[in-house]
Image (cartoon, rainbow, N blue to C red; front, side, top):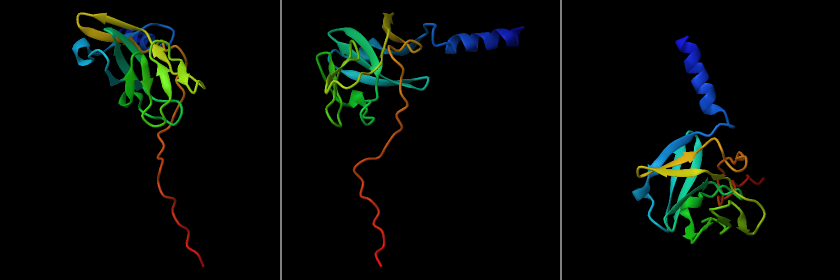
Length: 143
């Protein structure tokens, strides 16, 4: 019976339709106008503080995989450090160039901690493999 309960608990935790808030950070780790990253059970999430309110988004730019929290947070817009794509951290909408968006996650704050519902992204998270850019191609030998 104990084994069955443990299996049921694991299934309930991984059910994408069920909210599951996970402790992500302390509120004092994310000062107003800043952002940090967190890896929560395989999800790369950017946590942003906009005027004392916290927002969580997919931390990977859908363009070429840039790490968004390393970019500049301008009010409620995060700018990708690679090609300057801009995303609204409140909605996930792409402001520039407007081709796509990023997932947002529900956030709650309790007792000085930020909790993120990792089972409820606003849109599916696409697989975006890490790529290496700006490398010199190997030269082929010429006869």
